[in-house]
Length: 119
Image (cartoon, rainbow, N blue to C red):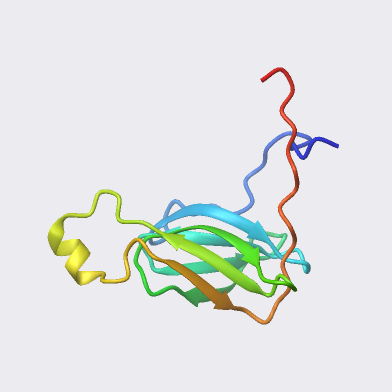
């Protein structure tokens, strides 16, 4: 196995009309997809059918790149950014650019290794 996708891509959740933008994702042991919502200050969990089933606040408006961490993978590590923010936006979002560790009460999965051939 290479860790690369198999099959044709398909839309799981259409977020075109939602607040913020989807940015980075991790999967938990129950099959939920945890996706940072850039511009909305949260991380959302989606079922394998694409339904949003949970939302967890992040103390910064631009969360990005969640991944499970900790000895038992029950914490979600979420980075945040300040790309494109002016001084007023940074002042209004004092936690911008920080990394957060969130206890979720769920167990995550390790990210699969990906092997790129010919690179």
